[in-house]
Length: 258
Image (cartoon, rainbow, N blue to C red):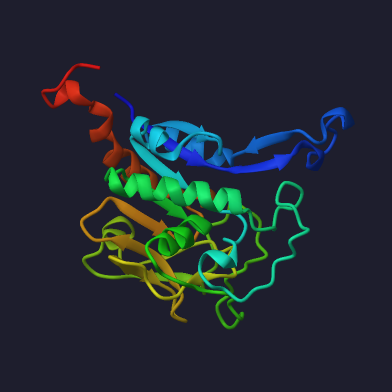
């Protein structure tokens, strides 16, 4: 049985979408990057888009794996950041505005998934939120140096040579990628102090954390965007493989066959 993989997204006003009828501009639409679903399906899973309006624990109870996706910054109030956020900027009308509702929902999903030992792939913003949920902190803004983290390149992109991630020997990331991998980069924040139980699995030469994992748990956080690599990223095969055991259900483990 193919595993169900939940994928998080954003909520936007239809007025942000060009050519939408003005009659509906104040209605909301849930938005998901299709590349996640494409990669999950290609790896053998069934992608499921997750709106904000469904109870996190109930959702996790029905899923076999979870992807927490990228997007705007997590609101600094969640972790004690010093950035000033204009309270008059509405995330339904601004792609870059922090979205407290999204923060709360995705944090609840992560907590529920961790408690259920559900496989988690956390990407970019999701990678940072995973760290925050477990009590970590963030670098509020990366000053650009020799290594460019906020790349001007268009997606999909396999990255530039100077943005090479080196992986910790013996880690899951090292198993997936080998000693090093050139990756794309579209972020201005990063993991700082690690959350409980997390370990660094990969970083760039300037010390920016690019991959984290949770000991003895099927949990991976990646700072780059595996869904937008020009060549396939093996993390999706890992996610689907890890989630497949959940998809087998009680019928394969001696329980009731439903």
